[in-house]
Length: 412
Image 1 (cartoon, rainbow, N blue to C red):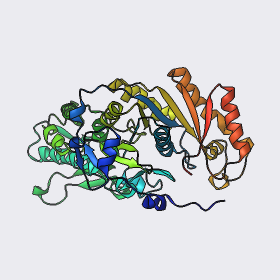
Image 2 (image 1 turned 60 degrees about the vertical axis):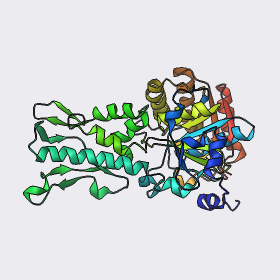
Image 3 (image 1 turned 180 degrees about the vertical axis):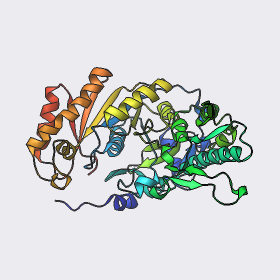
Image 4 (image 1 turned 90 degrees about the horizontal axis):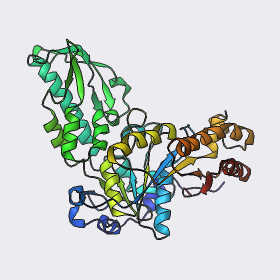
């Protein structure tokens, strides 16, 4: 097997363009950009609100996630770079990574191999501070809720029916369930509490669905934080927290502009998890991208039965969007895993297990084509260990369904 460089080695060897030049490539007026260093910027989308959306939207989704990896992000980056390579006007719209998975099992979320967005370390770490702002807004609401209880509890909040939790953008199981408010009478009310990871905050979900600051403020006001002793919902609006929360998010709401390894423009903005929220980047970033280019490539988290459905049922309905086509990413390794092969044995050719795992892919294709009536193409995300016989089997089975299955070698 060839000796491959690590993602971080490839990213660090990249020659990045100054972000001003990337903005020019994306037809973004530099006067609407706020640079964060040399290689990233926020874009004030207010100036573009009356511009029409002209792009064809391409959704990248995948088969069900396995420990073997599928590669939605690398495929999204690779497809965007490929469109630019053949002279098309293309824009990429991805989510921001959470620090939890970055320092956990999953690792970063800026693509991989030669299909990455850069500056990779910045994107995977603090980036432009969006997640910190979302965490601050979440915890401000928690503080206002507890302060309201401490100052007399005019809303008659039931201490045993508080559903708003604090958050931190880290895998810290020690904080999942805590008792706080300990100490003297002046230190708050003692109660059971807990922390979620920042990307699981409802604020992250509404932040990514909001069309502008006013819409965000209205959505924040509707968040239910607790119930009264008579069972009445208590909202952030009842605590009058929405104005202060919106103020904390006023810069975070602007999409972040970065670039791929091939210096093509990309928006990386917002990051709700797909297992607990809708799992796509912000409506603002996608819609702005669609005003700048002829093609916009975006991804939805998890498999097509979850991420793509949430994208189509929630984000598209809310924003009035419709993809022109859907790319379904699959790997031979993941399909063999679905066919019963242990992770340690995935490098060995196993056509029997591959055939057993293929119905997973074919069902996703059927969902997209038959339920949503959208054209689909399968991207077989190639790994160095895939054999010709395995790749041919996947292509042949897709061909039987009349589906185009393309070998995708963007990673290498």
